[in-house]
Length: 459
Image 1 (cartoon, helix red, strand yellow):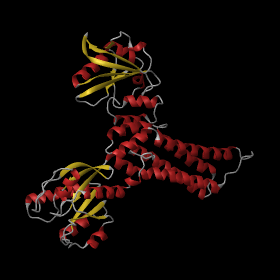
Image 2 (cartoon, helix red, strand yellow):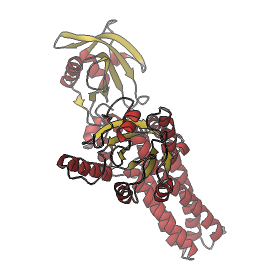
Image 3 (cartoon, one colour):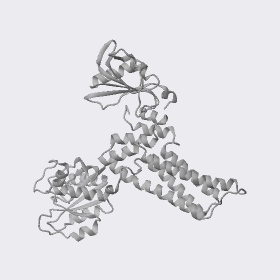
Image 4 (cartoon, rainbow, N blue to C red):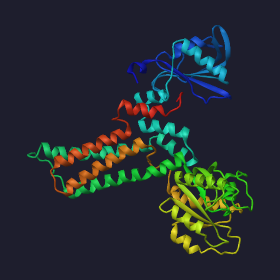
């Protein structure tokens, strides 16, 4: 972004496009109040620019001398605003036409239409939020689950930033001790104890490893994951899909092979959102249409991060069942033995030897939903997750943490290998740079452009 653009006054609609009771247009920058006064006229005839921070006025919005709508104008004075600049929010009725007209009147009065994430970017530049806190703001908007929203909120309130600050301070303390020993060996400087240094570096390594381990859980609770129900014909896949979807999404009949295409539905389960697919029964077939359905099912299974593999408790394993088991080898699978209300004919031990997680269910019973919810939480580790934990929630954060971990590991190996203190210092310097990259203190404009391009306009 051109640095000159940071001194513009920007405006954008901050509420979702569509129809609603209230729509908000946000204006931020040095001329926010003056520009707002060109289009907003208070009933008490007082100018917004004459007001104090956190003041509210009732009036009308005017375009080309004609009243567009009734409105409220809320003023925030710098630096006590979201962006750290003067900010005005105009609250009108939430129709597309009226909001478009108000925004056009503001741009005609001298405001520039804001880019994606530009309000939050200004908050970051003005020191109102760290980069990880800014990313948490975007994640709140896109969270796919209740746990994801809670984690994103904690991120926006500084959970990860506080952890990176703690790690940074420990790195700086170690560097200071090493630098003093290197630069003033003849002075009365306490010599560095290798055992103590090793212990401190191990603690740092463990902290960074814990952060990295949080990445996968963070992604799952924030973004959700694609999942598929797989099995041979007539094992109850569509019945299970309907149970999880909460309504009759798939046609259920006693006839094997009813499902020919992939049916998808967003399902809240196990503390996350699954883009769940009900696939055609997988078996060898000479029917041309069924073969296409099986091909699509296998493709969807390949694209899924989680598979519910369904088996019929009331019949022995078939060759098609065993072929499916082989296809799912090495994948993330929860095996479900269905139709437990019927007499058992299945060799359960064969399933248990193939999959780590095996659950007996009856897809026609509502209580199965609670069982699967608990099993999935345990399987994904979400039941061990606390929203207040510092976690990594995007690839930028993961990459920076990985670089920091590698550098600390190299410093630890240097100490254990009895290398000179300056070698350890260099590795710690690399770790410090990576931690500062993670927090946003040391990051390029290109990275900032990428981060804020993922925001919506108006945030």
